[in-house]
Image (tube, rainbow, N blue to C red; front, top):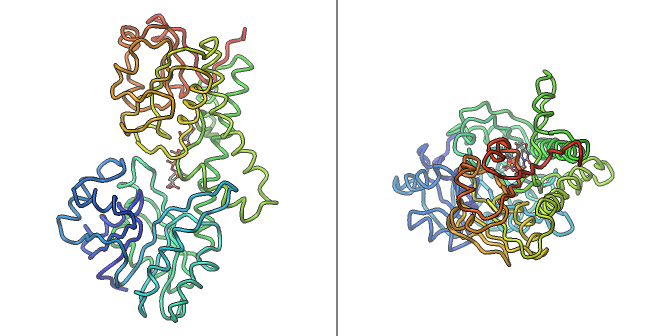
Length: 427
Ligand code: SAJ
């Protein structure tokens, strides 16, 4: 199947790179977003999110004339839905944005069109939810138009490479739909494209992120028991990982972001009685921010009135995404405990937490602090010279929640260093 024009609905972390990449491969792309702010920022040559290389790519795509912006879809050969699917307070998938996007497509749907869903959804959403909504157009799915699900699997921070290079799974409501999906993604995907059915493709995505979540949970549990047993979990993991069939992930202050912290709930929602392990893993990860705050409190001998330099607010290293970031919960807990917290997030300078002071430079954050806490292992924080830190900060307490600082150099600079997952035999 050939394509000339594609509408991409949702210009976020996946939609914008996909729309820009498709436009650069020669197709006419209508990039659709319902948020006028997003469109204004793009028209001004900027982007509203932080992702390496994306601003330049989006600009190039817009300058080429192949990427057009709109607040609603238009007729085209294909529609790609890449809107968010947040999780509700009751841990259920909120399909509101998917519904709005599908309903916006219906008036423009024509015979022979392809509709691709990329938003992460509970299993069977494509078949049981999206297909009937699209059929309200009077066209029959699989016969008059094609419908397929393809999970996005690109890692934030490496989206532009992974979008192109990763293996792509495409699940159709029928074989012809999967093949139509393959023909579209072939315009830019260099990795292998594997075809399956829609529900399998949805489940594959959820299994991947759940598998990672559970593996992070076991690393976090190991870190807690290491603290109690007087073991250095980082060293223990390094040694265990020398075993040819062991690959333990890294413990940390918790799991954030809009994917791994959310997606396992979609499997729990679909099969609550069959997923006790998944729920337990999420409980372990969700407990890490409180555990981290207690570690900081212990290191400082109480929080009240203590001035703390908190480095990083985003959910992981070298990105500016704050969604569900454990660092936000930790800072909130420190503030609630009476500490005077100064935060610095170099990848999202406007980021702040109620009750904490948002600083605009590392120097201002460190000035006069009693303790320095590494919340996010951004490159510039990991490379921070402890001697330099010692010149700026008042106290000599360092807390490393990422296992990223070399304890010896911090000790040499006069600091008492506390690392998550590192117990001392006398504790
Ligand atoms: N984390 C740890 N320890 C680790 C790895 C991660 O505590 O060893 C924490 C991070 O600090 C972060 C969270 O987990 O808070 C998630 O980070 P991540 O880098 O593991 O994953 P995401 O959410 O940025 O991206 C994931 C990826 N999925 C997998 O690796 C299976 C990515 O490929 C997906 O495209 C993305 O979710 C998504 O959009 O679903």
